[in-house]
Length: 129
Image 1 (tube, rainbow, N blue to C red):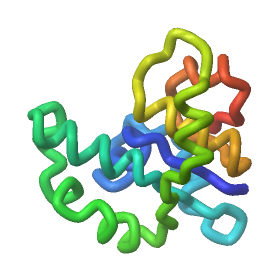
Image 2 (spheres, helix red, strand yellow):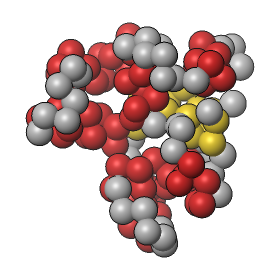
Image 3 (spheres, rainbow, N blue to C red):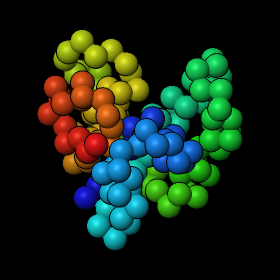
């Protein structure tokens, strides 16, 4: 299965936070059956939220998201024009631009989103938690 980590799931994995569900942790650990992706949108979100003080404990990750992604054996997922068009065109009340991009990427690239956010279900994406 192709997995796209929501930003919080990525950080919880990196910091071994118990908030990451057992099911998600098991899927991420299984690098034989699953490919794990981290979106450029998550890098943007981490760097932004660290800069404004919303992720004060994420200094190491915020300073080198690409290195952290590679160090974990995950794949980078770039943001394409197709992704941007889909994210911008999504209907609904969920206005978080980072989440909207992850939803669009999951839709277009056939990825299961690893997230505890049930609001993603409204968009019909596969969600693993």
